Amino acid sequence: MAKLRTINWYRRIIGFLLYVVVITRLDIAFAVSRLARFIMNLGLEYEEIVNRVLYYLYVIRFLALKLGGLDKFEIYSDALFANNTFDRRSSQAYAIKLFRGLIRWRANK
Image 1 (tube, rainbow, N blue to C red):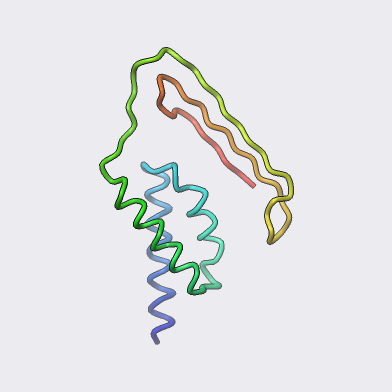
Image 2: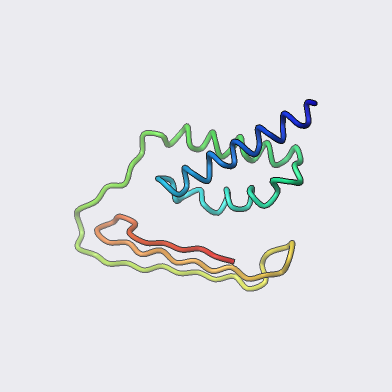
């Protein structure tokens, strides 16, 4: 019964974190997507990582994006080829900033 309660807790927390990623916190998107992969195969190490993500959100809860200032348009990108240790698939991402604020991003496998 304790294991079932832990699995339900994990699923609820992952759902909450996915909602938070979509609405406000893009900076935890990669970590949450990795944690969501193990929603059916729960281990103690994943619970510890979820707790670290929750602690990170607690620590930065008063931080926000600051727009304005430099009239600068920046684009960053990155790609890793066959870096996933589970299925050897590649991943890539990009971020676009305007006035020091993130206006568009994407990451996929």
